[in-house]
Image (cartoon, rainbow, N blue to C red; front, top):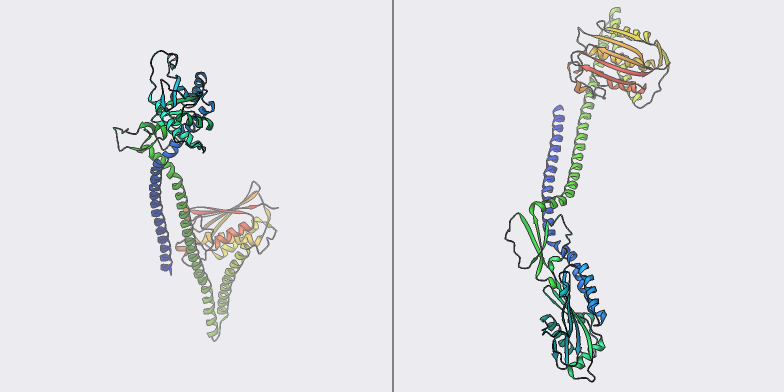
Length: 555
């Protein structure tokens, strides 16, 4: 039976260790997979998040192109140099990537022009040309006017826009109204780092332009047209790094840019800029060590969740193992209890049976034999009765099934009575006592007697034959009664002191091989608790043991 219990314990321990090893391997594998997942996610984000950076960085350009430039059309061609200068100032402040603006104050005529474009009877040419911007010097603002005697040739920006206007008018269906998107597309030219915009005429003016292209009108009409050429500097784009922990460096570079240092220590990606900046790109660079920080930031919450799950599983494993261990110990205690209790009952029953058989088989008994057999039967019956009473009392006290009697006890008489009963039973038992500070107190004498008897019996049982001594001390200290039972016995190992008051627990030694159920000290503790007191123990192996009992002092 003992071998089976030991094997069962080892099996439980092995299963627990196997479970812990498996979840530990699973935990390490999960961490490894989670780290690889985090690494892959950050590397994917390094490629995909550049779109968000582009959208945020290019948003001012989109606003400028879609909303600010069309404001030129609100002036219907009557924009003068002063108003144009103010308009440009608001643009360069809000949109730093606009470096310079060239303003063409132009006229559309039904007669040929010297400087500009002539197509059929339709012509367009500048009256004056100005340039504005922070880098433009004051004496360089005005580039041309009709009053100038010097010769001037309009540049390709003007001619390109004029040619586009002529083609649009030539293909115009005057019976339908062009959409705003169609108008904006035909009245603007987007080139590398440059946007040319001509104010959009009214529908009536466009019909007139169509007529002017086909024939000469009388009188010859003149219309005002404003054209602006915006010079853009892509290096002035404010790059908004939406993921500073992901991108270490973001620069605007030409599409053809290829860094000389292509070190393996860096990770790079790029995305082309739209519109007028299409010859440039955003170039993203981060060192691998920099990316690792972001990987760990991403990985840390996952690792904490895995650690929490691992901790819960470890706790579950520990609780299962503890419960199995407790159950194993409880089974062992109960087995030992039944075994010892059987022995305790078996011995007196056997003695009674032998005595009974001798009496039954004897033809006649002398008076001495009658007295001897009567004494044997009486003593063994007392043993059985005492054991049954202890079990019954333990159960009743534990379940609070009895009441605490309150009687006045003379402590000197009580201790002397205890000493007398034990020295009569064990003549070699040397018991001394001292009483300090009181003579009587109120308590339950039966329960107190059981407590004294159990501690005295333990002192005698666990002492060597030549050193069976016990000193009982009873003192009134600070309003409480303190009883000490100090013996010169074999002592209790320090590792067992926390267990000696547990039910069915027995210290494995030569004195406990037979005849101990493991209820004595557990019974004492229940008695003291029932009497609203406290019991503690201190002991040294080979020197002795002292039990200290503190009870309330009732008078």
